[in-house]
Length: 98
Image 1: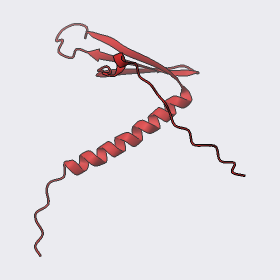
Image 2: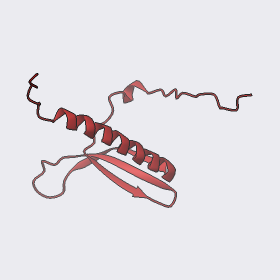
Image 3: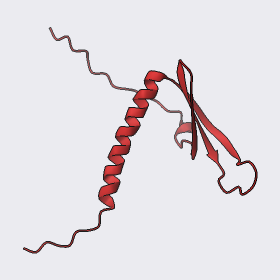
């Protein structure tokens, strides 16, 4: 008898209104004993005087466990991105003589 659980796949659906996503160039992270909150905003960095205007585009609340999983996933993805970007930015090697 095989005790292995059957493989499961995510079936995530997205509302067409969310397909475009939102742009954010600022994030704030806050936390309590129970959850983390990520607030993403679009900030106008062109303002030269006074308060810097911005608008919150989305806020995500998550458990501490999920926040750790998200951090691990971001670190993994960043490492992969940096490797690819680093390879792309290498100077071309001169042709080898045979």
